[in-house]
Length: 115
Length: 111
Image 1 (cartoon, one colour):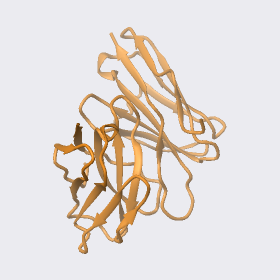
Image 2: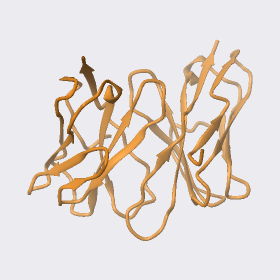
Image 3: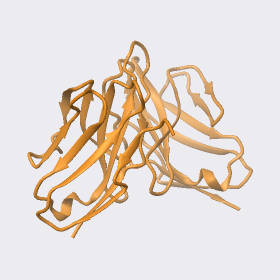
Image 4: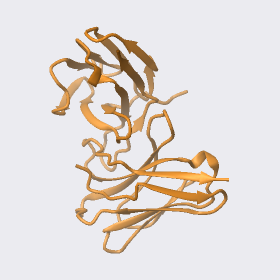
């Protein structure tokens, strides 16, 4: 499968614990996005990388959240000291940024439940 | 905030065409109309996009009005597997901007 992959698919944790999610984009896609989706809502943008550079962060990304893309390939999203309000689906998307119209392709998501 | 307005839900009989409307009255000249759909518990799936001309691919057709203030996504022969939330999004051409999702339209295809 050459699509975007995310691991784990599901995560249950206790409040106060740290969690880390991984996203593997489509090969050669230089742009990578993280979104969060809560029940009944559309996805909301969190942050965006072009290659290894983190170029934009949403105000939703509190200081407990950190994302990296160290070699411009896979990315990780870490949440420290999780809270019940962090329970959501975390989605990753990738795209090939070039001249012209860019289409983002999404992974299956990681569903986080904070108890 | 999303720049689009969609009905919250629609039903469609299996085998019939599903026509999903979207209003984007404040769209700018450099903004495209994108459609994604999200089947339960999966990530959003890209369907189609367009600027001002009608577009068709293997999944759907996109009809954009001449004034570009609204569009319709057409699934020509809906199947039960097309049951999903459909999102209409406007986005600038020069790519590196996030997608801004609204609440979309929940399409239920009924046997």
